[in-house]
Length: 331
Image (tube, rainbow, N blue to C red; front, side, top):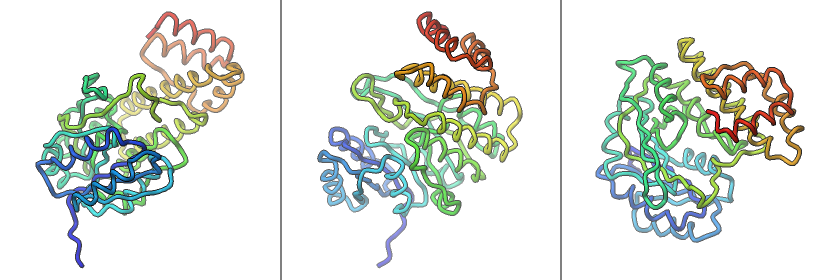
């Protein structure tokens, strides 16, 4: 039996999503462009999500359900990568949903580019809009590769799986997968690896994706800081450095991106350290672990003082200044 290859494979990791899964899947099924498949990866859910996945697969032949022991979002996405039959890939989280013209808007670009980036609306579960993520319209036929990457970074789009689609062969031929040893920024690292081997990319000034942000309703993976965050941010920065070298990114753009990434890395790691039972020892630990990214500059008063204090390397001063900055709300 010959199974026809769909144009688009949609990978949806599912974990305890019984309250939101219907909206997500229905929004995909209601697409005006119908040549796609949906891969529902039930990642060891303890609620009725697995049963819902099976029900959807029975109702529509374009839906396939897979069940596995809980291994995290990277494990679920990797399962989707191994099972996908489409020419192109996109990733939709089970909390989120998309406009009915989503595939129609991106398909013609997917046929011409290795990777396509787009925007979306960040909103609460109730539908209240919080932010609009919108890239500039740029293509490698008219713009330098590094210019597009830089623009996507500045607009906050780069590294989010939900805001990109990619040619499946690019991923498989280069043996790219999601790292299962980390629990945050795995999507960024995957994106940077794909960009390193892509030949053509495009960003579109459209917002067909609806990204649900939980504000106090639940704590998501992306809002937690794992104990090995120092290791993860260094890996992420290394991957961006490789990307910048591969595409010969101009010095000013490369330094802008890396300085911002280093500043954010230090900020998050110090946030983690200051909340530990022994903050002084934890800050001293972070100073040691992040010594390879100690030199950076950041265009703000907070960034200026942070870079200076890091070079001094006194954990007591760092903790005191961090608390003062937080109390004064210095930017």
